Image 1 (cartoon, one colour):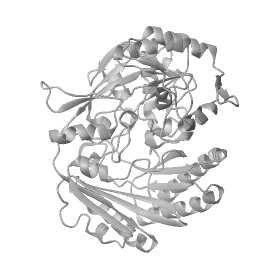
Image 2: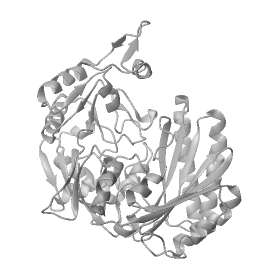
Image 3: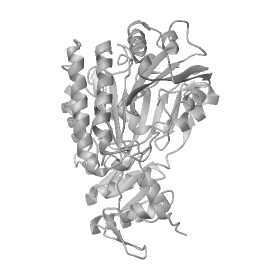
Image 4: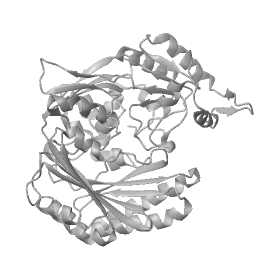
Amino acid sequence: MIKKIPIAAWFLLCNAPFAFCRSDGKQILLQSSSVQSACTQLERVVSRASQVSYPPMVQYVADNDHWFTSSMDFSVCTVEPGTSKDVGAIIRTLGKLRVPFAVKSGGHSSNPGFSSTRGVMISMAKFNKISFNSKSPGEVEVGVGLTWDDIYERLDPEGVNVVGGRVPGVGITGFTLGGGFSWKTRQYGLSLDNVLAFELVLPDGTVKSVTHEDEDLFYGLRGGFNNFGIVTKITFKTHPQGPVWGGLTIVGPPGLEDARAAITEFEETVVDKKAQLMPTYAYINDQAILTLFFFYDGPAPPSGIFDKVLKIPSYSQNVTSGTFNEVYKSFPNGNPFAGPRAFYGCVPVTRYGPALLDAVVNQTLHWGRTLGPQDEGVFLLYAVQPFDKEIYSHGAPSAFPPDRSRSYYPTNLYFAWTNPALDDVVLDAMHQSTDALRSAAREDGQDLTDATMYGNYALPDDPLEGIYGKNVQRLREIRRKYDPENVMGLTGGYKF
């Protein structure tokens, strides 16, 4: 029996680009005949392990759902493959018919069309298994339909961990394929530096295990997102995991000067790679409010590492210790304001001196006061990420970062709003803000000549060279080799 969706979801569907509703609430779909034909063919080519869904089925709504309404669209149908073989049948069919599609795992992308479509949505939700191989200790295989919450929950009792997300709610796939900054990055590098293998369905439908022996594909997949096929499983290197310590402190304007000194001192003096600090500035009630997230990969940090951070005058403070999963779950969800329209932006820098931190505060206030009166749902956040100079030294050459000899810290901008009429206004504001912070960094003496952005934070219209630098040409050659018909060009993202 087909499940019906709630009235609230009906409203969303009735405003979909291919539908309208009669006064009695019944829906009439205006579907592209070619996409509808593809959906019908998919029903025939997949096994019973997979499911094709249409509106108003509950599964259809779940498959199209994203963190942000601005990056969500309504496909003609959705398909949840249950096996890698079925993924092959799906991609062959869509490639042959030249039907646009999207691939969605966690739905975390803020860029419209990157993991959404008005064609066929492929949801990877059924790839949700976590497997240990007794013959290969030190590694774990995970399905791409999982979140880091799922993985940490499963690994906690085993006394091991992987290099993954820092806040709850984030899916593993785009995070890893784009890079992956973690609480363990200072120790072990990016998430992609800790990948041992990918199970990849190539654009011709072939299922392939990709390891370091596959020089081109292993290089391209680590940082190159969805350009070379559909990843179904990832095998990660595991690391021993004991108790950890962490928390956050919320600082108002009176404490910002002390916080600036503490952040600068942490970056310049703390060499213990188990320690990490992530300051985030937000615009709230016409003020810049700072939340300082801190983490130590041990039961407690040695004296001196976070002493100044903990002594900053604050509105509130939460410090906890326990298993990694317990401390991880104590941090706010990665999208506490789920539902609004949003973009991420990125400013790569080489350090966070006092002048640059002041510029971050000024940008927070300027754009909060500029955009706030236009939309009461505006929320702005600037995340400062002082890692260390060796974060890119842990892995082999990969699509990202294009240059491992220099480290750039990915300052993350997050702008959320509710009014669709402001989409272009906000995008322009983010470009202006990223430009202003780059200028402030240069005025601080930083050489950003070859600085590249982190793809998971980049804006939708940022150029490929701004993310991949000199690697773009090689990545285009790899794409042509493994996808000569440009099947993956039918889906969204940064395309080679």
